[in-house]
Picture 1 (cartoon, rainbow, N blue to C red):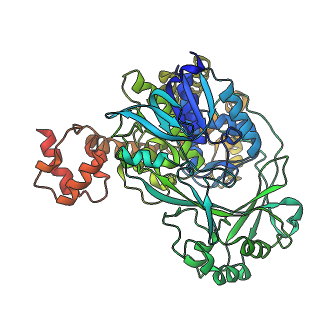
Picture 2: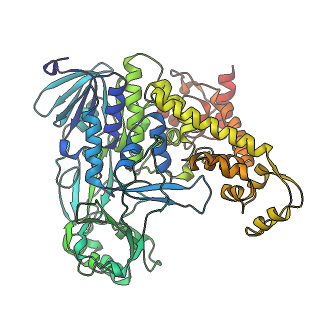
Picture 3: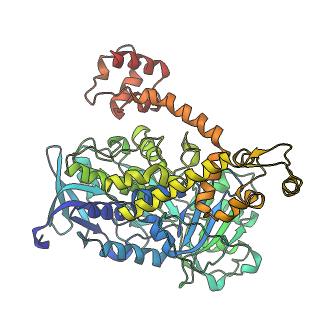
Length: 621
């Protein structure tokens, strides 16, 4: 293909975390991809906290990796701290978090993009979509150049009509120091899309040379490393600590005295902010009885003085920010390198898309990331991967790859977006999944790698590694269910250290189900277990499957019940207006969302159980 042809298979607009996954997946599946960025130096930028993962989000990253995406690989290659969160709790809520070297992350991702065949980078703003009837045909850039493609994926982040606020001052920008994307919103509205506004923000960055860490609590990484990617031979890198400080009454008083200078409280910002990542002024106002809030001090990289103040997002004026920051223990003499700011931007509510992330209005037009109303790098990357895969399925005229709530957090995320009319930035939480014990970060490969191989993003080498691992896990479970130890004095002497004892012979699997017993104890008790010397990912998975067997079976039974509703498929041209036996509110909601089955219909806010029963009878006929 000649570049001058301006003809491509897929066009990806926006080079954040969603755009990178979409472009790489599409290209690896054989498409010729044109990849637009407002600034090629900011590919895969982390404009907020320099970290990947955390509760629920780490499961998304593991799922991306299991399907053949790249976020996990890049996070593993560029971490400066690895830490398991909630390690004392159950496996459903344990989470890996990687503090990343921000610049290295960007460079590593760009190297993947530039070494992937068929990706053409382009620095320009897309201002218009080209459609014929209800089919996408391409895009137009700010210079009037037209580019044709069979599929277009929009991953515009906060750039779409972005406006930054610092105090009562504002200017057009998607991120600090970057131009906004102007024109595309108008094009979307002309095509019939509903476009709304959301708001997010980020804290100030300070110079680490002006921080007194002795007044803070150190937060080191884990000595025993865990990684995101299921690929072997992950890199061992030096780790650096984070630190913890807290706000105090002086901080809160400064904030309260200056709320009249907040653009949020003066009504200048129309968009709703993220509920689960509020600004510090929101925290102080909403939780007035709380005397202080945790503030984490996080490095942005190994070769920079820039430090991120996690938990201190604000849109108050720059001079007020200096007073606020310097009221924190250890930051009394802090020098602010970059001020905090709020950004308001356009998004396209995802109820206008299907589970494939393709628009209901324009065929071949896909949306992924913050344009769908989400927040977070991980949520964006997951959507980008799905959009990239399905853009190819659309071009091939083959069946879309969609994810159920029971299969993955990716499925839960997308189902929430396309089923519920999201009015605030959506963040993935473990509590959003009714199947979270089945959908753990540790078993993402077992759930999704076969699909990734079938799609074509997992190669045969990695798939064979996966199969060998699964065989080892099953063999070990079988062995533990068959191997018995006797109630000897020596055995009970070891068990007494853990507050346990046995009065009869017992299978190792049965013993492992006890709360005080883990796989390490079995190594003390049984020579064969010790001599096998299986890796942590094998023994850890075997232990979870044995220890939580009863709970897993209960959740699988729950899944079967829900599965009955999924069997009732709803035709795409179903006429809800003719069903007079359900409420007008339900008819309106069903018509707007157009669920694919009764399970999805039952999750729509405002649709009552009685309405589902009526639909079941009608569909049953």
